[in-house]
Length: 344
Image (tube, rainbow, N blue to C red; front, top):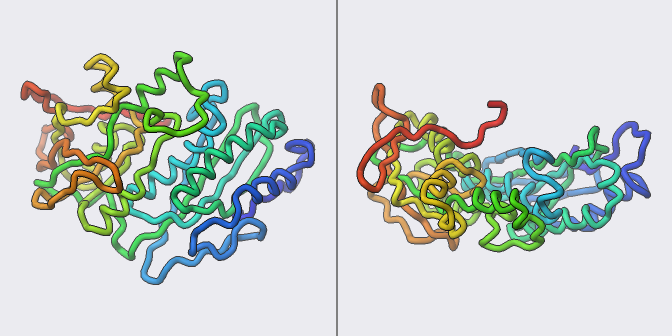
């Protein structure tokens, strides 16, 4: 429910003072927010939002599960909070949406609930990113985790002009394929975190694409507003997998120029083979992958982020690969979807 509320029954308080005290701490930290769409936030049985006239309401939800999306011994609380919100904001960015409100549900083990520093750090990371993009925390839920792991779920509401939200299904033969920013950095930094060379960073920088990914909301909104994109998706699962999703939805095939892929500085430190694998299959870069008509004059930057043309949309043909990778020497090979997929 939109109010961060207490469970019907609980034999063990989440921490000294109980869940109501925890809710009050979150409410004080969240504040009133900056969204004009939010009429009533934390403190009642439901939040009240009022979209502008002529807008569609967009909703996305993402789990962040300890042991799957983060580890407390690898990631700082600030990073965990930031990443929890960034995942949902990136989904809104991919559709050109304007964020309206966020709803956070947290299940905490008693030991974590008693650790005031951990919760404050988590909220620092989440609310700093929320403030940056003008999205208020409007409610959610809290509970004691059934295990020793932290479970977080974020729901994001956004809006876009009626009937104009960016979709995966609009790519057409002859369109060019673009991406924002750089690729492979999240995978490269994650390898450093695994090796114990990072992870406890508490503040975001461009050199922390895994710990503090930056959702491309301004770029997505500009693509929609300026009618530049024909289709769009975010690179949460890796170019190879996300481009396959876009091709499937649009009924087309695609070609990617390997030499055109913009590599993050961290990826450039890897071997050529590892850098290419990180850029194509790594995922969690949270850049935008989009198509545009070949005749569209594309700016060098959008929302302050560089744009790079990395390929083209081609006709779907029998026995032809859905996505073809063209190497620097001109050789061609099928690019299989090798990015992240749950339950595979």
